[in-house]
Image 1: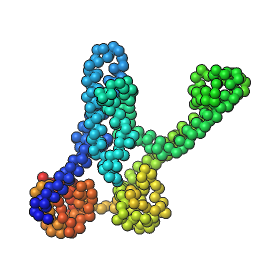
Image 2: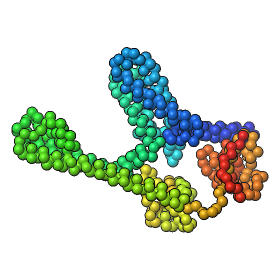
Image 3: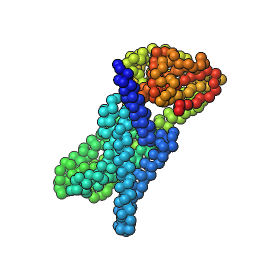
Image 4: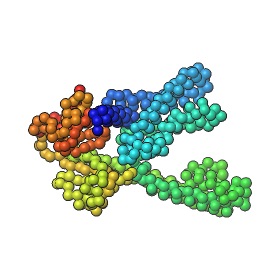
Length: 415
């Protein structure tokens, strides 16, 4: 390779590294709840304020007197806030690779587009602009603007108490679906039964097998509007029985959700108390094809004393780490370990290699550093590399150093 080609390759690698770091910074900025830097916190505030202002204007514009006085201001405010939603969607679209790091860029982008959050983000701004291209469908497009209110669910990320609600519903989704399925069966059965006994007496009300669906739904769900009701003795008796069944059916999902709240609260309390008393630290590792743990059971790992596998995340499922559970590629393993009593703190330093840094294009074994300092990790383009002696450092690398005999932990970025 000629000197020119080598120089071009380095420039391309440097540009790719800078582009990757910029995208990662954008990803952290649009991620809700990441407020470690002022720009991230400011973005969260702007996004939340735009959403609240947009919803407020949408509600206020439905009042005729306010629309007459402030209509132009309402439309300008809506245009500005919707434009913010559009920018937010584009930023989330181009940084989806970091939201789904286990897959390719194209697949990660597609997964975000079809996800619940992606669909809501798209509907937050797209119906506003569609009438420009399809004027005939303006009324229908306006209906979809109500999807903006679903963006409020993103506030869940700020509050653990709201996250518990989501976790409970997701963890109990099978039981909840089963209870809803039972209610639907009873609803159809009730409609069929009521048609059989009431059709002769009320042919206009119970005219076919499905005409009693409204009655059965309002009765089973204990609403009972009274616009449709049985008039025969057998129909009234069946109505009483179905009403009693309805009380029990509605109580099933309520009990499932209540039990889920108790379980989740108890689990979080135990984890909090245990971590506070024992001072346990956790790390998360993703298993790859090169890892020796892939294919082994928990009891075959041979973890040192004081270390424990706390949880295993496999896809969207969290597994209890019993001894016979076998680890697979792409599993995320959460490992906990007790702190060593009366031990000295670890001193870590991160150095970002910028242009003209003396370590650029130098092998680790050739670096002139203190014997008390060791390079324990090199981060390159979002990938962690084990620092072997023949590894050559490049511009954009993040080098993590460990020093003996220190008492603080600090981060250094080179100039």
